[in-house]
Length: 284
Image (cartoon, rainbow, N blue to C red; front, side):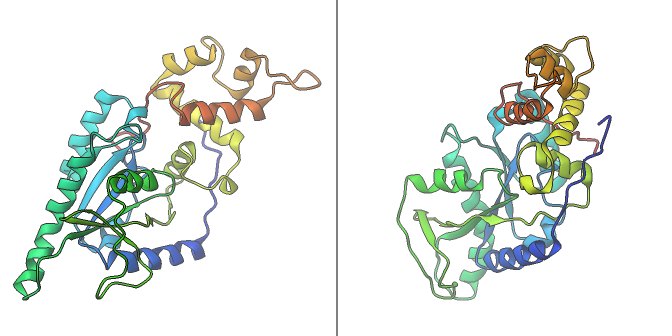
């Protein structure tokens, strides 16, 4: 990025509490479905995810894949599977074609732990899985998609915390129906700013204008023709001011309305109106 003036503010107390809660939930399951924003295949992953999961098998789900460059995404799938030694699947909220594959893979990943329990003399039981991920990557939509076909609540289990609610997806799979929120601990400010782009960070932690300008800078670097054409700023510097002027968003006194421009830039990007992008680089 050309300029990087934005600073994202974190709250360590909230992080510690969220980590404790997530570890309690993780102790109940055989495997994990980690939901990642496909526009940020690296930045929307938690740095210490392996330690947090305590080496539990995981399926990585690149969600919101309909908002990304599909050719680039294919390269990312190969890259992530090789680097993380974990299966990677695509998903989006608009269709359910991926459901059977997600369920099949989750059951497959849970099998070693079930086999280990059976060797100790316990009867076979369905796989127990939960969905985890950063805020706003689409965990709840994945849970809703998985549970839509089966609303069979199976409640408390022997040896399982009473408050946890489970849903039987099929005879082979039980899903913990509350999303595990990976805490927002992020020392890397560049990654944090990217998370703000996709609305994975509370709006209380940043201001729209500098974040929107950082987004424009990155899009200009990676997808210049597309973003400049969309905002009709093909010759001047790609700034909030020039976008406001191009759209005739002028406030009293004749100044460009950069507040409005910032809100529209963030909304346009998040809704996929500007184009289909991936903002991370594999080299990072």
